[in-house]
Length: 221
Image 1 (tube, one colour):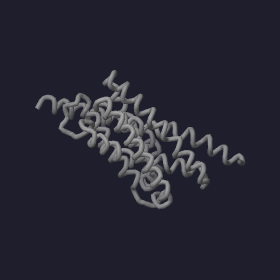
Image 2 (cartoon, rainbow, N blue to C red; image 1 turned 180 degrees about the vertical axis):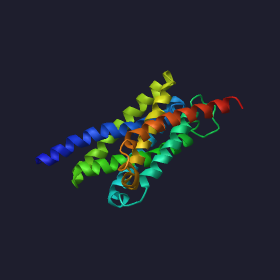
Image 3 (cartoon, rainbow, N blue to C red; image 1 turned 135 degrees about the horizontal axis):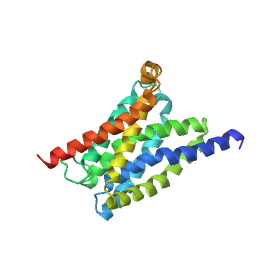
Image 4 (cartoon, rainbow, N blue to C red; image 1 turned 30 degrees about the vertical axis):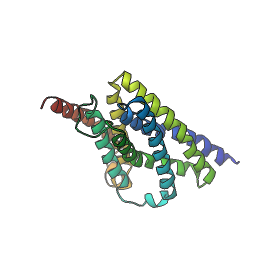
């Protein structure tokens, strides 16, 4: 129980609170239109899927770091999910997002794969190879995801405009994934540091604009 252990312990708590919040937003947004009983089931299964994915990704974290453009591909997938969730704001979409239990779970799992990557790599780094700290990080993410998802789903049903906030958070996360990708960072961001903050900000505006236009076109064919 040396200083490094306790520093890692505190860092993992902070990282889980910050990074698991994004996953909770996705689960809550995808499940918000389900009936109460199915919403609870979707949150439980979505959380279970997120934790299972984190365990799997943790086991192969070292290999994942070597995959070229992995974060960029993940970021682009997350942008697509943000657009889908935003376009489905009023429940009129032809997209199968949140309309049924299976489609909500599918959306949650795809987003979890992308968003768990950052959490896994961050926790693995903060743990400095300590298996028990990694295990603690995984265990801590469960109540955060469960409680956070329920709160997000409940609030968004009462305040539908918060869907725009949620999609903005996902767009920002996607931008961060892209600019932090080693290949993108080394070849582009190093030569233009301002892009590290401009890219996530621009993607928020882009997603909100395209999502709004997309929804209006479907509402008025």
